[in-house]
Amino acid sequence: MPDFSAKYMPIGVLTAALQELTPREVRDEYPDQAIIDWIDFAKDLNVDCIQLSSALHPSVADVPPEALLDPVANHLDLREPFNASRAQRVLKALDENKVGISDIGYFDDMITGDFGIRQKKYDFMVGIMNAAQWLGVKAVCGFVGRNQSHDMDQNLRDFEEGFIPILQQAKNRGLVYRVEQCPMPGWNTTDCSANNIAYTPGVWIALHKIAKKHGVGDQFRIHYDPSHSILIGQSPRAVFEYLKDQGYNFLIDGFHVKGQVIDSKAIAAWGYWGQPIERGDRIDGKPHPDTRQWGNAWKVMPCMHELPGTARPDPLGYLQNRTVDWLDHQLAAREYLAIDPSKTPLIVEHEYPPARTQDREMVGNMLKHSVGFMRGIDQAAAHMYTMQNEVMPSYKLPVQGIGRESNRC
Picture: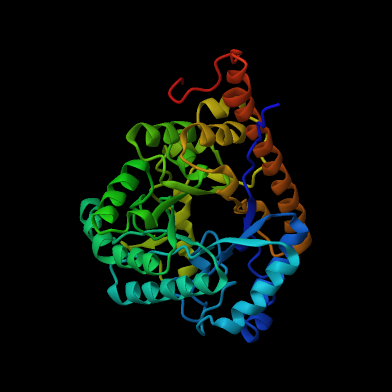
């Protein structure tokens, strides 16, 4: 009998899901304890891997924590450079718990117009890449960002001048840089919606062409998150098909599995660009002097993030691209993208606002079931794909029905 094996994707969690799993006073004194504790926690969640979150330490960060919609987690603490002894301790914990690291995430503005801060972030990313080498991790993940003093076309030059050197550092270490595509509309108090230029396939292709020209095309890949497509009215299936039609379906190299539930009333009031006035983040044409008010810039988003499994099934919402159809997402990824599913991580990213808490039990229970939901969905999609693309064709059997189509609605 032929061997028609379904390929499942490895399931992981971004460690920013629980920033303070290890108390701050402990992790500041023993910087690797946060990683060790998260590896132990990951075993309880029944995941295959973690995406290790890193960030500038709060004592040296350029953006105040109160201005962030989703607080970052510096679980990989690089106030001191990572080294062999630190790596040995982390690798031991990974081996004992049978958990891997998919990549290391540092989500920041890498081509900011403040060149002093840009250099600081560049140096920090190089430190992350060094840590990835010590740990045998093959990729890092983050944003590109945007120079706010320049228009989008000028930012292509900023990418060439400020981001290509990062890709060259990745190449020197045998690493891939996976770009997450969130447009980051409330990242600052300006009225700009695209604060991370690498937010849509048309831009990915333009940036890849620049990277390829400089010999680092293989280092530039996308860590795709369907919630960001839903935010700007795109269908994930249509995105995947577009990339295939353009010959760029190799760009997607990993996934954040985080949903988006569009607020229809907010769309009626403000449209997809979101609330542009009276947010409370600015006064008299300047950012509010109380930095706690800067977080109001995120009112621009007419939606709420979904932790997979927390939103009710919504067939009409799927067709209107108001929420993520997870089964179709996993099918479409296999149908259109040039991926090996068994080597392409699905990373659960918890940013569901009502459950953004530091309660380990609460977050743990939600993550455990979200991971189980995604594992079940992915396995169902894997078997459907194998049945319809391998088993049935081998017996000359037709596939029934029509199914979802990229531009059907």
